Amino acid sequence: MIDFAKERYAELGVDVEAALEAMASTPISLHCWQGDDVGGFEGGDGELGGGLAVTGNYPGKARTIDELRLDLEKVLSLLPGNHRLNLHASYGDFGGEKVDRDAIELKHFQSWIDWCKAQGLGLDFNPTCFGHEKADDGFTLSSPDKGIRDFWIEHCKLCRNIGAAMGEQLGSACVTNVWIPDGMKDTPADRLGYRQRLEASLDTVFAEKLDTAKNIDAVESKLFGIGSESFVVGSHEFYLGYAIKNQTALCLDAGHFHPTEGIAEKISSVLLYVPELLLHVSRGVRWDSDHVVLFDDATQAIMAELVRCDALPRTHIGLDFFDASINRIAAWAIGTRAAQKSLLLALLEPREKLRAAELAGDYTQRLALLEQAKAMPWGIVWEEFCKRNDVPADQGLITSVQDYEKSVLSKRS
Image (cartoon, rainbow, N blue to C red; front, side, top):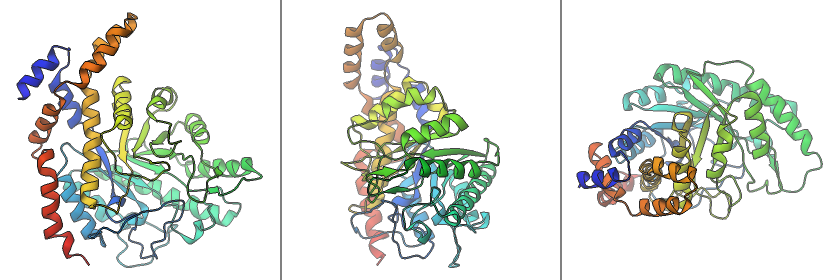
């Protein structure tokens, strides 16, 4: 079957083996928070805050680090290719000790580093600027209270250094991404003041220059959240300007914009001005609801734009969704594989023929090629990718998840 697919694609000038090689060398960063509904291991009351909400109560949620790692290992066994883990600071291995966020140390994450090394994973990191009493009023790095700002500045500085240690030990740069929930439910009287304070706080956080071979700084925007419907301090315009000015990576989250606004069209513009791009592939439904990623038009458009811009070497692809209404292992696997399928479809586009037609002004040929590509046997190539990586094809995915639910998840009370 794969020989048939290769022949068909060769007629369009597409090298299937090159596409498979690109797939194998493009990791997806799996978000740890899908496994336990963004709970973490700090021993708190589980209140997220910051405009975040997890819906559903499907049985089998991971309750400990060991359970979360076991679940992640199961997910990894269902995914073709090589991947990374995206970890929030609230998931440290604190051993039952109460450690506030301005006092976290590398030792609290060493077991995660060791686990990733054993699994052959790279590791990405995030300060956790929500779910804390010092974020209850909706402000962290932009707070009018200097004591609050200083607390979160210290937390973010510690996270950067921990991220750099992660990158050094694993031999792969850690992307340390800063997202804060700061905003207001109603119209503010002084937008500028909040943004000036945020800029000053970020300047302090990033003042120490770190080796980009170990740590890559990223900043992430948002349109609005629950409780911050009228004003978010860290808007797209704010962080776009900040990333350009300071040459950090910019994170584009697919759920952090208007429901009718896609991030795919932004990619080519952003790449002209920032050194690297971080993507949080998600699915917002009417709001930033972080639904499981689908093999849909929006996800396909994101991946197509990355490939058309030759941007994969400068882009870090991560996932950001959490659904507790369905089996969490299935959600992880289905969402990640949907992102991978979208990437494969993009890699199998007849790019050279499309560009040639466009440059020649032959838009009829361009349209015809795009439509023809949709009907090509990309599914055969996907199954070959799964086969080469010894993971189930789509037909066996749910059976494997159901077996794990019976043998493992059902025993968690």
